[in-house]
Image (cartoon, rainbow, N blue to C red; front, side, top):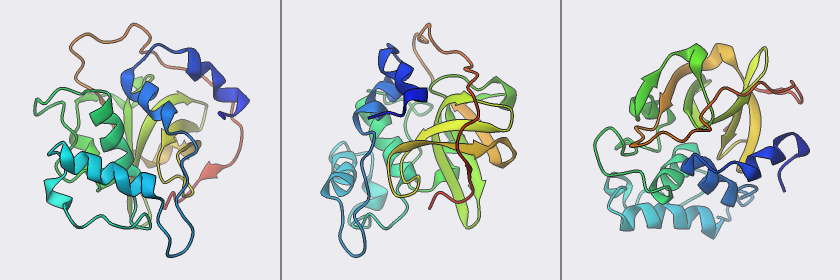
Length: 189
């Protein structure tokens, strides 16, 4: 169940990537050597859609960072059209590769459903914009403390804002000011 601060998302009619992400909220990485079959299944689904050939046979454990995999599965399920500017990046497991997805948006103009790319120690992180406060973006993503969740990430870590290349942009794409609550994430791995 979504935290009270974010329950308004359940009534949003789009964008489709948010709608698909909501279906996976709370999915948790398995502890230790075990693997959550749902997360592993996302990779199999991407491979079956012929979007994941580069990682065929490679992604077999949920201990491998999966924020990019989460983005790829929700983009796929949201039926992002197969045009180069709409496809998940070829190396979708690499969070920083999502800086080439869709179309560029100025950092100060992020809006509901935009893909946000962040730097972190040892690599990057990618998730969806659901709001902002004075110091952070509220990000809906996978592999945020080993689960699909919404967390706050510092604006200072932002690398890129990318908007899906919509054929018809949903009317509810807008910036959303939220109250600051909870701590800032420093390393989502």
